[in-house]
Length: 439
Image (cartoon, rainbow, N blue to C red):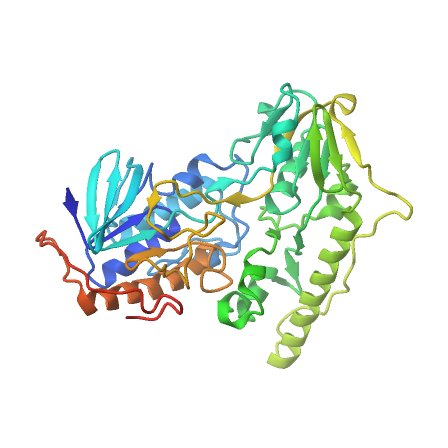
């Protein structure tokens, strides 16, 4: 059995950021990755996808974008190359093609069993990310077998779909991009709209994420919001990164011929049951957007930026034709729809985590990434410590905080293995879990 001070599970941006912070503190560790660095970015994304965050916002500990297009949006090959360069920049100790099979408590540390052998360490950092597995509603199980069902991670391009129309379920970033691309290929597309957070790509001459960054909204901490769970369950941003920097929203999709319907509530055979609620979701998204733009305007006045940015822009809600209810059912066969794409979000699953750290929903219990199991940490989740925690740009601050906690824990009672292979022993407790404070 191999031994080290810390085992990081996952070789994406979260795992690499943690590795950088541990390296800076001289803490011996290994990063176990089931495939290659940034494996999910390589395999579970469609061909045309780009980051929705501008290149300048791909900041990681000790590393940032220095290319010629800071306002552009990376393609998937570019983001995987970016993360590979990041790993090489500090010689991250990544052990690839290694799947973790079990994490179990052993004494004061953990035994980690993989398909490439076993490890022991006093600390484990779960950095498998927020977008672990697709969240597909139960309705999918009741659709007819001749309907092709996909999730965004399976989709590649319109040419790989069977002939016929497509139903895309979900109107956040992934759903609207897929609806637009498939519609542009000449197919008939129906988009089932649920909760979403509408955002323009630009406002007053600046990228919308520039505004959120400048105003400090991404830095809001868990203890600064009314209810952290509500904030964590907010819908994803309805925002896309495109070479033309254009805004894509429901108004543009409808103008291009995409049929908008309400939320999917069930299915039976070739019938999909819908709720006539698309107008209410669009109105709710418009109200939130109007509030955000007003907040930006107040920030401009307060900070004296008026001369440096564009003029205030009028807010335009997405209008729905009066007396135009949406259907309450959709007959896929009659409509010629042969494919359903579930762009309905993500869930997490930790069947290999055999320690008492999961809640009733199967999520890891934590306070700012520090779990109630001493020595076990989690990183890369939605609103872990700050609103930006699940972004590439946000994972670094969280990683540094957890590395500091882990370092303090070791200083309190755990002798480091270093490279000598000396056995470690912990006397740390769960104190400091609730607020993620150093022991």
